[in-house]
Length: 362
Ligand SMILES: Nc1ncnc2c1ncn2[C@@H]1O[C@H](COP(=O)(O)OP(=O)(O)OP(=O)(O)O)[C@@H](O)[C@H]1O
Ligand SMILES: [Mg+2]
Image (cartoon, rainbow, N blue to C red):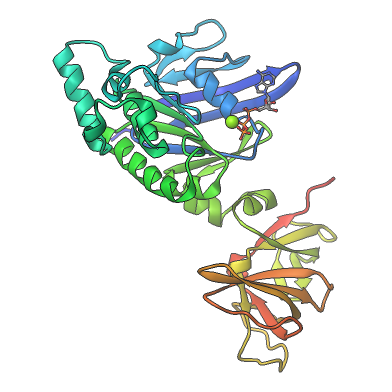
């Protein structure tokens, strides 16, 4: 069997504003029915990328293909309304003077009876049949959001572009609508490119995450891989708090207060960052202060003094001032663990969860 062909493919897309490169040689493809999240900090070029794919902005270089057919390059631009691309942006405005049914039917052509059927199917699917004749101002924010989704999906777009579509909703409403939206998109078999700057949202929604920074895609992969095999220190810290140990390399090893770490490929004298997440710091209760006894999995324990402990709901965050450098190290511990400030404890780190990166030259 041949590999499935991408529904949407962008090649070497570049966009400059006033001499500044805002989207820099971005390539990306999405398979039919897949959800890709474009994830990155504010200003990294996410919306600009989406606008070029939608056709409301034009790239300086690069090509866009839909099901293998060129829709935009240096010479040709198929206008937005002919691209079979649905849009849902943060400020999705429903038409205030049209009913819910008329809003959803807005982009539809063909026999009225068929339009009506499609409208009813979608409104039933998002649980809003009882509001079919209501007007937008009679609906809650979450309900309006669902109408907007139904409207965007009504013409069966081959690709949906969504730019932070959930950011206007409050937290608890958001989780539900997010899951519901995802289920509907999957049912419809739509390919989705969803922009977000929230890692949890990307992990919840995406088959694949494309991590963007400074106009470039720095890493692509399944959420699990991006989280567990990040390309650099910034990619780790984008998803969670981090702790960093610095070390100098000798014979592909570096010594730290938590024991030795491998630093393959780094020349002698090179400096590395050893990066790990607070949830991979362990508290070594067994030793009860009796001191270091190295193990293969956890290396050597190091001692810290509790500075602050806070309960966060499902876990506790404890900050330690470490003996070895007098700096703060963060640990998260499941459930309630609130040791008193001033308590000395021995800590270990999960060696298999540490990332060793050569320090970038300034
Ligand atoms: N029309 C424009 N003219 C000039 N500069 C622009 C224009 N559109 C975007 N930019 C600049 O391009 C950069 C990227 O903008 P973009 O809107 O793509 O970021 P973003 O990743 O969507 O950020 P956010 O998460 O804040 O929405 C920003 O520095 C922005 O100021
Ligand atoms: Mg944006």
